[in-house]
Image 1 (tube, rainbow, N blue to C red):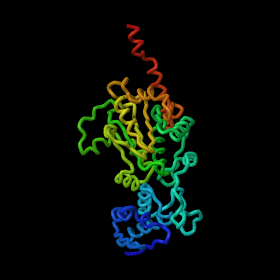
Image 2 (image 1 turned 180 degrees about the vertical axis):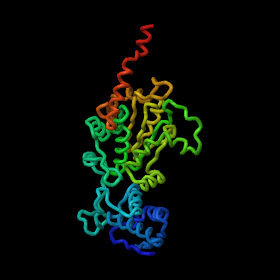
Image 3 (image 1 turned 90 degrees about the vertical axis):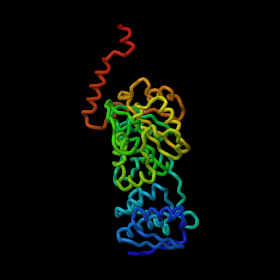
Image 4 (image 1 turned 90 degrees about the horizontal axis):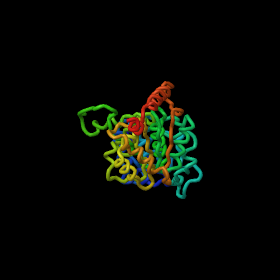
Amino acid sequence: MELTIEFPIGPDPVRVLGVHDRNVRLLREGLGVSVTPKGGIVRISGQEEGVRAAERFLRAILRRGGRASTSDVLQMLAEAASGGLMAPNGSDYPDVSTTPGLAPGGRGPTRVPPGDGEAWEGPLAVYSGGRQIRARTPGQENYLEAIRTNELVFGMGPAGTGKTYLAVAAAVHLLRTDRVRKLVLVRPAVEAGERLGFLPGDMQAKVHPYLRPLLDALYDMMDVGTMERFLESGVIEIAPLAFMRGRTLNQAAILLDEAQNSTVGQMQMFLTRMGEGSRMIVTGDPTQIDIPDPGGSGLIDAARRLRRVRGVAFAALTREDVVRHPLVQRIIDAYGEEDSKKPTPAMAEGDA
């Protein structure tokens, strides 16, 4: 099958085809079609399903004035391949020829990132159609408000309070609303009281078990096609903490999970990776430290050092914020009561 698409006078071909024909290459590789741009015409040929998907993709870009970020392009490609292509709010993309308020020359509306209030009003915007993610407790509301208004946020609390899930959702939201260009999700590769021994496979296979919780959250917020394309293109990066050394991350939402298992040096190294236009979220549970020296936890040390630093916020989640099975709250209480009866090191020395 073969068809042609003509550009209207307005949209800039570079915006539609991408810098150095980036969008053309994505179509060829992602949909297995032949795409030949020439002048104001694009000729597409190949299997009918792929050709139709490529047509939906290009017409969607044309309808929005030829303006699309890298994350937009990848998501639109995934949606086109699955048979649909809708705008982030679920409606059709506006037609460039009929929508009022376009920039001069018909090149579409000037794209200005929304203000904080507008961007965070209502549920968080993720990539799964119909999926709404919002705070379910006052503590979670305070947590999201801290993320909205601060460049660096520490979210601390017990298991089941949503500290990691909401952090991932907020990071995806920042990407979805064009406030950042990529996500970097990080975890220390520390075993929880076990010795796993030699793990076979390449580096990715070795660290995969440690990063699985972050992947689970992401798969809950976007379809498999979008997720795989984001990972392949580097829009989403998931890595162990040790891999962060020597990097500067600009225009990124950066999440460090299980931060209680970082050392003081690792925490300092991680926090200094923040570049221009980036946001950081650090999550952890101070009651579940698995490193050999619990007193050397980077999370505990950072809470002491940064408590009064401007631009840094600390959100404390409690058992009241547990949103898993109700039994989880009772389990947390039982362990808390048991731990409170144990003598502290100082008490033990005094008794001796």
